[in-house]
Length: 349
Image (cartoon, rainbow, N blue to C red; front, side):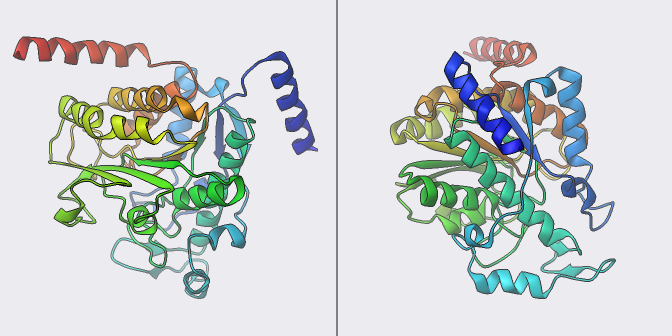
């Protein structure tokens, strides 16, 4: 019945010429699944974002969609069945944990939560491709961009954005999908999965002296991958100039049919896991630049939560990002911050 109602609303919006609304897609399991209350990848992350969206008046602009569990056939487009069977075989009993590596720990609900996270991205891709949504934000956990095709890592079990990209390529026959990763940590899993795949442009920035410590050969540009390694303490001006120089021309030339964002907010100056000096306004600016540059997408942008572990800075940064994704433009504080940066640049010259 809900599917019929959404379809009729979509057709009505199309008939009267009104754009579909942006969506927030999540699931209650993401706020229930926890290994340890002190673990940085905590269930409190998503409610913190939701609270800030309500405070800023953004929440009411979003469609709310419940994520489905992903089908095995969709997962198999990225992760070999042998790896999926391994994860199932080590799933611990309730109250127990299984340690995959020093950072990545499975609880009883971790794999199921990961399956819903990947399912959220597939659902979001379907909705933006069918014009049932104008942009989407997947409020999911655990994150995914460190998960390689057959290996977990960095809190990640399944690579959510990779699953979404391969689903789009398989089901909608897309030839140009851009995956943009602005988490403070190098997206090694996504890089491994899409290495030398001409259908996927991977734009990746990160702090170079953090996990997973990418090799120097990852620096620079190539045909399908553009890496921007940042030094510790990099601030807004250097960050923005690097994006303008290295990412935006490549994105414009690629003309993506769909964009998937690995939206990590741990580059914020107050985040406990990174040592960069970004401001929440930088995430609004970056989102706006991506939308302006990739006008070929026509609303087909799916953002997927990755990192961001200090609740206050995570919530403010995600809200800045969603303010722009929701079609509200950059918030006034972000525009004021941009003018401040411009004034500082003028004075220094």
